[in-house]
Image (cartoon, rainbow, N blue to C red; front, side):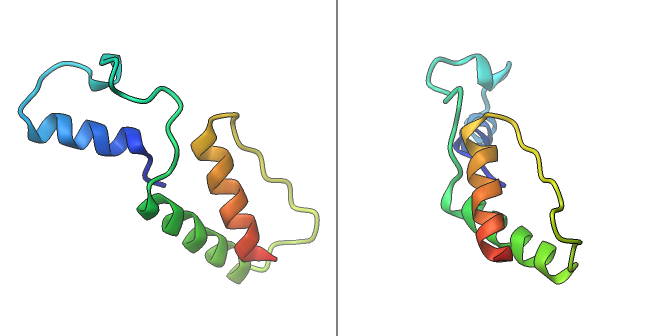
Length: 79
């Protein structure tokens, strides 16, 4: 889902800046999800629920905050 780093990069481009926005000290290095990203995660969970996956399906995510947020929000939709 959309993280705050995505918003930062979009604004960077809209401002006509060049280079790599993620190297800027203002860009978050372990960003969280935006409200849009949170809804995207819930929508993904609803879609996973619709797929009726087998019990004990393993889901794996990285240790980045936004991936853990995505997994938690999606899993809530599946329960």
